[in-house]
Amino acid sequence: MTPDPNLNGSDFNVKSLSKEDALCAYARMMNTLDTSEIAPMLAEDFHYSSQWVLPEITSKADYLAYISQKLEAIRSSGSNVWAEMGWLEREIPGPCVVMAQGDKDKLAAVVLAKVVDGKIKRLDLCGAPSPYSARRSGVYPGRI
Image 1 (spheres, helix red, strand yellow):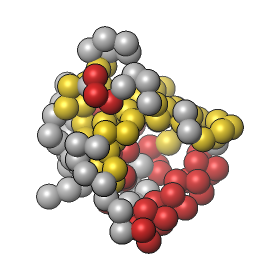
Image 2 (tube, rainbow, N blue to C red):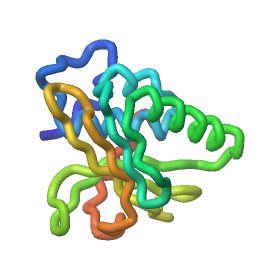
Image 3 (cartoon, one colour):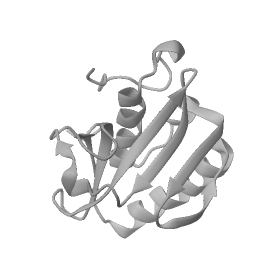
């Protein structure tokens, strides 16, 4: 299934939110530095885990506070972040977001999602599996 690149948080069908749609919303957030689309898609008991951030974030409110600060830091730095739709074949087969920083090909991580009852229940930012093992799509939601 291909995520709908025009999907936004105000008009998605809660019952039909797919992993791909959740990841597309995450990629768009990272590419536009704007949380407004993804915020209504997050479960209240949302969890976020990063191999570089401890401890795990365990609520929607805490995640939005964390990611808003991170997006503002990226905006202020003038650095480019690239979030590309991708697919993992081996370790954890399925859709992912391939993250790069500075240059599209300077890959840094993959993002995995879990959707439960039409809401994003969990996002994991991972260095393993390697972003270099992902099949890249060339699709960067939110970028022209």
